[in-house]
Image 1 (spheres, rainbow, N blue to C red):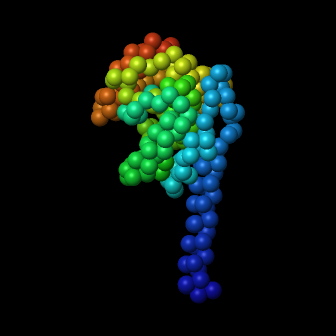
Image 2: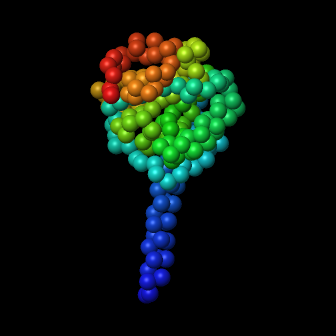
Image 3: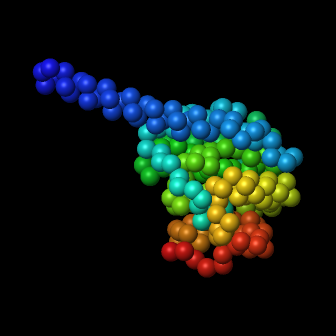
Length: 207
C-alpha cells in the first residue's frame, strides 16, 4: 500500500467515526423519553425542525450536579409553530458563533405553551458548563412574566432528570447570571425571582 492509499484510508476512518458520533448525538434527541411529561408536550428535534448537530458535541457524565436556568432573549411563543420557528432561528445563530457552533446551546427550552423543547437533550453537554443541564425559558424575562405552565414544565423536567438519574439528588440550581459575569441579564428578573424560591436554589455566584 503506497502513501496515498494509506492517507485515503486514514481519512475514511476519521470521517466514518465522526459521522457515527454526529448521528448518535442527533438520534439521541429523537423520541426516547415519550412525548408527554405530565400535561406537558415534549417536542424533539424532529418535531421542531432542528438540523443535526455539527461535529464537536460531547457526551455528559451523569448524574450532573448543576442545573442552570437561562432565557433566550427572544420574543415569547404561545404555540408549537411559533416556538419551533424561534428554536430554528436560535440554532442558526448558535451555529454561526465559534464557541457554540456544534449545535443549539441548551439541553432544553420551555415555551409559554408549557411545551418542553429538546435541544441537546439529557446526554450531550450544553454551552454553559460540562457538568450541567441547561434549561432556557423562551422569551425575554426582564420584561415578560413567566407563567404557571412554564414553571410547572421546568419542575416536571427536573423531576424527570432525577428519576432518570441524569441529575444528582444533591444538585444545585442557579441562574445563568450566577455562572458567568457577562450574563447578568439572564435568566431575567422575572424568572430569577421565581427560581430563588425553589428548594435546590444555590444563592451564591460560581465564578
